Image 1 (cartoon, helix red, strand yellow):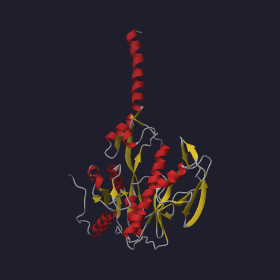
Image 2 (cartoon, helix red, strand yellow):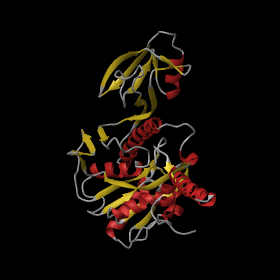
Image 3 (spheres, helix red, strand yellow):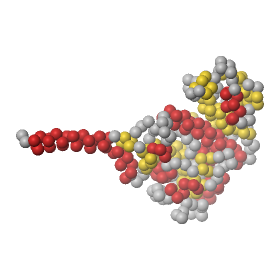
Image 4 (cartoon, one colour):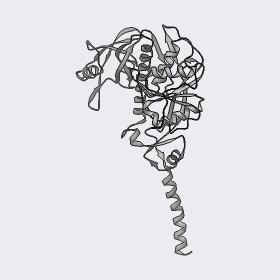
Length: 348
């Protein structure tokens, strides 16, 4: 056998191995794909998603669907083949890793942040819906997250309203941070919280983590409502982008008749306490997911309109949503007349 033939026999499998490695090695990108949609007016595992106590609840037909996106997790790496598939897909998207996640961010950190955002978005949505109905909503400071394994775990709970810390009345999140930092080594922080309408005292001894004293809670803005409203979304869903659909579903549940007149409406958008709808990520994938779920109208945050027009929406109308009130009025106008003039997303 000649040296040339021998070299060729060695080179071919080497080239094949290198080609396979090039395809399978991770690349610094994140993929987005259309996720599931959830009718917030429906039930999950036999229980209503919008749960009300202390007020009449109206269960009518029609659907208000929140939309989601499947996103590569921080510690899951995308290979070249997966990246190319997302690049050519008409419904998927590809983004640089650094545009989505921070350096060194873990899946656990991402999920914790997502859970905090979900709690905050639900509370803001409830507040906006109740304000729309004329109720006064009092702002408070509450617990948005309790870190497993840290001192507060098992003592404080998500949605505990923080009334006092070490005898000081709490009106801001920064007060809690400062009072924990001022604790002497080995000393306890005395919390007074309201949980389920009851006032209770809890002592938590901070632990030093990365040079700082931590009790293991994330405090944030919350509200005292005139009656109990809860949005029971499956734990696997997080983030702030369902705020608009939560607020509409809560309003619909607290008022007689069907807001959608029995039709399927989908949408997305964050919700701030004033009722303003904020932009979100993955709008094109959410439009596709909504169309696939049978939605006839899709509510698009004003800041996402330009990108939404690049998605395949089929016959589904894209309606610009600036505030919760505007979105609600658009739905009412559309149910009264499907051809009604609405604040739609348009090409600039």
